[in-house]
Amino acid sequence: MSFDINKYEPVIGLEVHAQMKTKSKAFCKCSTAFSAPPNTNVCPVCLGHPGTLPVLNKNLVEFILKLGLSTNCNIRERSIFARKNYFYPDLPKGYQISQFDQPICEGGHIDLDGKRVGITRIHMEEDSGKSIHDFASDESLVDLNRCGVPLIEIVSEPDIRTPKEAFDYLTILKQLVVYLDICDGNMEEGSLRCDANVSVRLKGAKQYGTKCEVKNLNSFKNVSDALEHEIERQISVLEKGGKVIHQTMTYDAKARATSPMRSKEEAHDYRYFPEPDLVTVKIDNVWREKVKASLPELPEEKAKRFIRDYNLPEYDAAILTQDRAIADYFEEVCKEVEVRSYKTASNWVMTEVMRVLNEENIEIEGYWIKDRNLSSLIKLIAEGKISNNIAKEVYQEMLAVKDQDDTRQHPTYIVKKKNLLLVSDTGEIEKIVRKVIEDSPKEAERYRNGEVKLLGLFVGKVMKESKGKANPQKVNELIISILG
Ligand code: ADP
Ligand code: ZN
Ligand code: MG
Image (cartoon, rainbow, N blue to C red; front, side, top):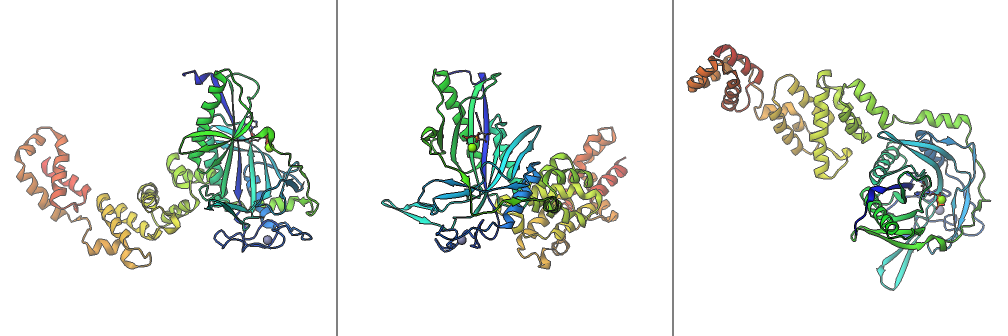
């Protein structure tokens, strides 16, 4: 069956959970370390034993303030926690401590390229434990290490209109939490989790359609694929004269389809009520301003500064600032080179450095070429001592030396050892030029008769003859003067 998808407009709102990088849990001193053996990072507080009292982790508050302030949220001066009650085997307390009607951050926004997405709220809560079903077919195991691990939930307004915008929103949000150093941003490992709400309506309609919520999305690509499929499903329901039912869907990436998980109409009431064991969180001006002053330079500002200070194209600035550590590496490289080489430095980081990161599947922290050694390589190019092609060869040699403090990784060492310096000695180059002209009398004649485009041919021959080591600028000058 075919129908006109373009009659409809999707409406999307995302709920993102981000696991905070605090050392200890939200309300007790247990470690949040990921790799501990099951049920070892637990205590009476996070296990919910009667008579214990939770105490709020101050770092969690600072972390959420950082994100709230960076997304232009209003910070509530007094916010409270609430209990969200439900039964689940990996939730020993029988409720989750969360925030409900008085979240700490509200009314912010994130700007995509040419589009503003509203942030309804950002609140603090605790994670539940984990049930593990895949050990044996007839039993489930419970690991409570994750109980009480701090999460923040970021709820967007239904301002997103396409799966691509959802993807971009998540990309920017991830970049932000990683820059702020509050979350490691890894969706595959579950430190960022996204539930996608989506509805469709006829273009021009004033009211939103009935939404479904898609869960189990473990990559940005999955989110946009799942949305794509869910939008098509909803449109086809409507086109067949049916109604979209408000329900929770799960996405099966292999089958590339969404299917109902449970109906929201049967969903229980969480019986939220104010958490009696925790005091009100008070954020005064002093605290708020202190956190504000501690914010790092964010990607957008950094990109603007790169355009201004290093005179880079917008494209370069965007690529280099995607990752804070890569941006730092680039700046270190630039410290040692001249202003006119900033663009060369950008090219090297964007292509040769990032290629190695991709090939090796590593972060820049694991990249083993010292920034100063890359600076030296760029200086050799700028000073005309080696050509771009030879620089690539030297770079390969540098890569082979894995210890960045080993002097054998230094480009001048490699250039010397392999005898790669460009020949700039006019006498020596002149000899080659004269020989090449002698060997090609016909072309020389044609050049003299005005076929100047043959210059390239002579340059090529001289470069070949010199095994790539003649200084190309000198070669050009000499050919023109000898032939001319
Ligand atoms: P619920 O009460 O079902 O939790 P909320 O109003 O709290 O719904 O919204 C949850 C998320 O769903 C938010 O991100 C919001 O932007 C989004 N949302 C709300 N209404 C719609 C809709 N009609 N279509 C798509 N997304 C929506
Ligand atoms: Zn604990
Ligand atoms: Mg809700």
